Length: 473
Image (cartoon, rainbow, N blue to C red):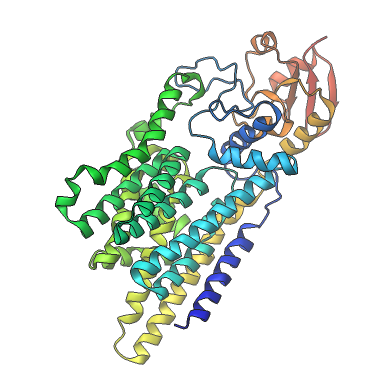
């Protein structure tokens, strides 16, 4: 393939990736998984409005996070190191607070990860496979949505891909600078999301495959790997000293004892891989890629990478069943598997006619995958409850900046985030909340709690969509 054509296609595919991820980029944080996006965005906003301290990120909510319901008066939100949040906050200081910039940071990381995935695949499998992988990764509907969310996940996935690229460069060249770059990026990936630790599996495999077992027995090989874990261990120690800032996470492992049950396999294989992520047509090619990729040395790297992600899914079984975005790390090696399966099927034809027929079949499967994938994902972009956005904007305009509010939304902080105030995302225990400083109650429902409150406290503003009640006579 001519270099000019290759570079043109790379630029085109990356451009498509950017354009697709700009879809509804200006929407408020009230779309799919708004609860996770709101908490992340609150940390960025509070870095600007309250204090900028990487060691003590703060959300908007006073609600207890920890498994033992420890009081959290400082609103600490410390599960992951706030690298992504800090980047967004830095932009906020220049542009003003707008969630769109958080989405744009995710897009930058997602597209950067796509480019390094192309470089990695090209280095090991050649330009045709790399270009097809890049295209698949760029246009996958599930990946498009989660490549523009206000969450740290696109960042950690991108950093994981980049660290693997530099791992391959390091193994090839044995240069210290390549190993150092890999170590720094992998350390940052693990800090952003601890799940990136599973990337160590393909790294160790690639070292073994290229340097042999004797090399793995030397201490020097583990120095960069241990160094990549050191910042994360320091952060976990810091987190251990502030348990009130960590939400319960043990249930993510095997809550309800779901691991390896029929429900686990149905959710992961049928609902997520087959329906949502690879959407039938892509799933067929993905499975074919798994059968083919382990047969050759260089493609086996991506096979082991895929197995590492499957191991992560099994370890964090309940988390992956509960949350569909937990499977985002699978998209990179999964796209490579689909590309390998597609090219294998095309080359399986012995005559020109057979290759044409196989090419048409592969194209049909990929188009089917895009169509079904978009059908499953299209609702993710919608605003689930416009009333909380309208009520939040009204509260932000009417209430004092230091107001402490109750914005009940079944514990979901998305409503609280819209108010641009600190408080609680859940109702109940109102006397205790008022004692703790709550002075306004904002609701979009007309439930019993609302009825009891309006009999006792004045309404500041009320429409058919929401009510704002002042919690004082």
